[in-house]
Image 1 (cartoon, one colour):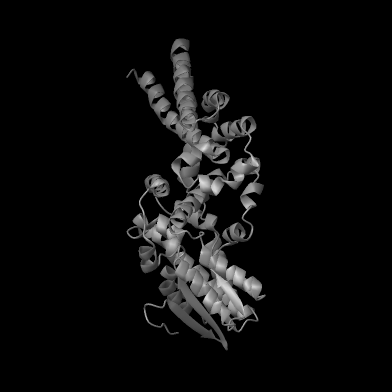
Image 2: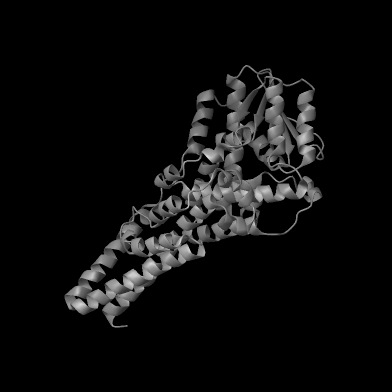
Length: 404
C-alpha cells in the first residue's frame, strides 16, 4: 500500500490483480463532493464503495422515507430512543450543512449519483448506525451514558459557527465522530466502537467485496479520519480467507446483551417497593395508604411534569399522571409507551410534519414545533420523569417505614 502526500488523503490497496482507491473526504465540504465527481468522471473505476450503512443510504436515495415512518410500530418495538438519537445526529449535520450551503453527505450523494449515471455497482461499507450507537451505549458505565446523551443533544442545539476552512482542514471522519468528539478523544470505551471498530468493519467489508466481486478498480469514499485506521486493518486482514472476513463482520454487528445487573435492577426495585407497601399496611392501614399516596403523587407528578415540559396535550399530561404509578411497578412497560400513543392519537402529525422533520430538529424550538419530534419528546421526558419519581418515591416510602 502507498499513501501520497498529506494534502491529498488517498490510500490504495492492490489484491489479487484488483485495486481499491480510498478517498478521504470531509462530510460537509464542497471540495470533497467535487473531488468525488472528478475522480469518477475519469472512467477509471468500475465500482464505488461508500461510508454508508443501509439506513443512511436509504435516507439519501429515498429522502421521503421519514414520511413513511410508522410511529406506532416505532413505539411498540422500542425504537423511539434510537430514532431520537438518529434525528439528533442528522440535525447536527443539517445545522453544519446549512452554514456552508451544501447538503449533508454531499460527497456520498455525489458518489451514488455518479455511480448510477455510469451504471456502477455501489458497496455500502459502514456498520448500521443503530448497532454502533447500541455498542457505544452498552460499552460504557451508566453514569457516562447520561453525560454522553447530554453532550450529544448539547452539540445539536449549540449555536457555534464553524468555518468551511476548518471543516476542510480538520477532515473530520463523520457526523458521529464530530458530534462525540469531546468524548471520543479521551474515552477508550467510546473510541473503540465509534471509530476503531468501524475502521475494522469497513476494512473487512471492502476486502470481502474485492474478493467476491467482479470489479477490478474500485473507488471507496470514506471520511478522511478513517484512512489511517482502515489502512492498518486492511493490512492485518488482507490475507484472511473470505469466511474469516465474514466472521469478523458478524462479530462487529453483534450488539452485546445488557448486563445481568441492569436486567435485574428494575425488577428488584419494583419488588422492594411492593414489599414496602406490604410492610406499611402491616404496621397500619393509615401508613400504607400514605405510602401509596406518596407513590402516586411523586411518580405521577414527575411524569406529568415531563409531559408539561414537552408541551404535551393536557389529556396526555393527565394520562402520564395516571399511568406512571402503575407502569413504574412493571419494568416491561414504560409510561412513555402509554403517553406517546395518546399524544399521537390526539395530535396526529401531518405530511408536512414528516417532511420538515429533519429541518425542524436542527434547532431547539423545532423539537416542540414539529408534532413528530414532540411525540419523541413526550415519550422521553415522561419516561425520565417517571424514572426519577420511582427513586424519589422509593426513598420517601422507606423513610416513612423507618420513621424518618
